[in-house]
Length: 58
Image (cartoon, rainbow, N blue to C red; front, side, top):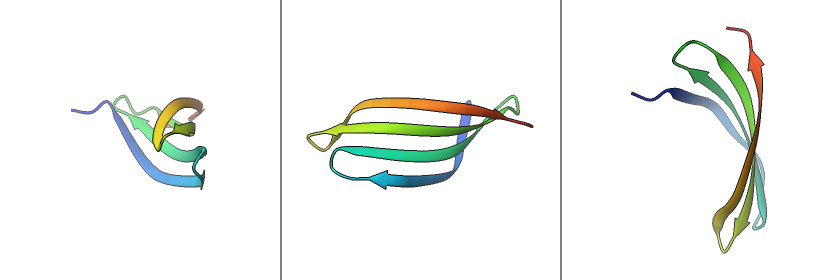
């Protein structure tokens, strides 16, 4: 069973070098977060990833 469920995933921006994604994440315990992810691409693959999250009310 997965501990995390992603929903409302949106790619905000993407090119050959970087990408930005926003998603809503729900955990098994009912906690929710809004998550922004930054991707850095190299040779068409993700070379680096960084996330930031904001807790939301249940």
